[in-house]
Length: 373
Image (cartoon, rainbow, N blue to C red):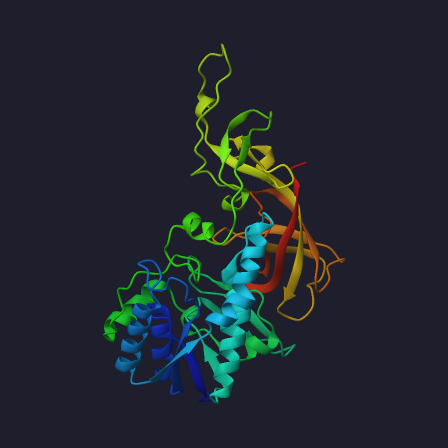
């Protein structure tokens, strides 16, 4: 194996810590970098990068590697957070982790690492990279641990970025990563996984968003235009949302009490022009199902769209792959997917990502959705 100077993004978590350990065991010259991406209210109880840096520094000390603290907060605000707010204000539900990987971790961080003389960079993502022997192209693969696979969040990476990327824990299951961390005495071996958005952390989301987006309350209507209550601002809701609506069941006057009276409500549409939140009862209501979507801002790992045909697809993280048909009209910026089986709560602003088996082909941002036909 060729030995490289590898700069590892040490987040303070166990995955990146084991990543650094594995690379050092393989004989690489390993250097750690801690990325600070968020500064606003960073001393709060929800998102203190100080503790994460202390954890990352402790890991570096145990492994005997150097660590550098780098502030990318300005890049983050300009490249990720500004776009995040624009999308929410337009009524869509963006996924900042996707943009963060493409713009910060594999652009600003990659550029910084190259200036330090790195030949490769590495992160603790559960994904894999391989070079195709016949085409010479780099391929992005799902992580071995299906329950932890993060290729969905990495689908915007291009050939230049993948050629420099290493994902050692993508070859392992999470349980094995934890076992290694404990075995070698890493101080963060039992540290809880982060579940928050990459800059928000574990803070209450609506409260956080409220600081940056003006809210305009309006009516919550069902499909028959009955008023069920008031919403606090359309930006604070997402399609398929069930909790936090503040409404109960609706019963027709004089009707006998039936099983459907108290079926849960789900957000089915956000009508921005009318400032109306449209809700329906029942998980499988037709308004929550879609057979087609259009996606913009496409990004293909190979540099061009895949051939027309049927592929696996995800329209949200942590869902099983669903068959989707892409036509010959797909371009480097736009594509349409048709689903033989209706998909639930396909949400504008989220990513539609295509797979050929374990190979992630790329994807785009969901721009429009056709309702169930």
